[in-house]
Image 1 (spheres, rainbow over the protein chains, first blue to last red):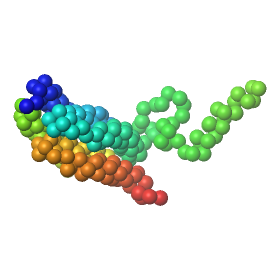
Image 2: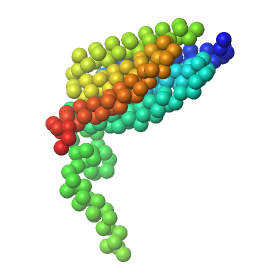
Image 3: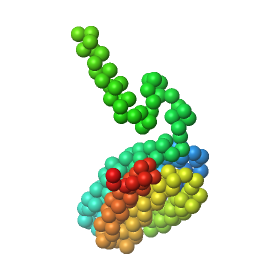
Image 4: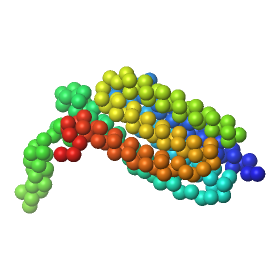
Length: 136
Length: 89
């Protein structure tokens, strides 16, 4: 017979994880525009899976009496990969749906890094590095 | 109590997978489809973890680990293919 508080904790993590997962995917359907949709799954769904994996870790630790670290591995892996995926999808969107003229200004006088050519970047960075030396 | 919470979580992630399928079908941009497929993979991981708890075994954790890895690689390669027209240059 397991402790009732352990059961409450496991159930709470399961319910919270389920709600976060549902909210993440609902945002994917509800929000308009790719850039807005990107927010819902990358944050909420990762949190939802994290909740479920914590629940399963508690379940196997307290109900079965076996500590398992697989879930922690999966959680860490998902937390590491979610930003990378989001970055890639945002870059895909910028290059396929937007033009340098339709993007908001960066406020630095330079274009968005993704649109700046390598030669232009090298020239500007050489200028920025070279400026103090000329003063010296 | 855990059984009810499990059923609720199963329902939530199943419904979430249906929402993702809707976004995959409706698009309209390739970026949206990549994002929906990535979310579908994450939901599959959650469903496998829930299935493990429901059956009280730890057999399927390797499966969810593998799905997490192949899901990440496939998302990145799909995005790269859309961006560059080639996965490995």
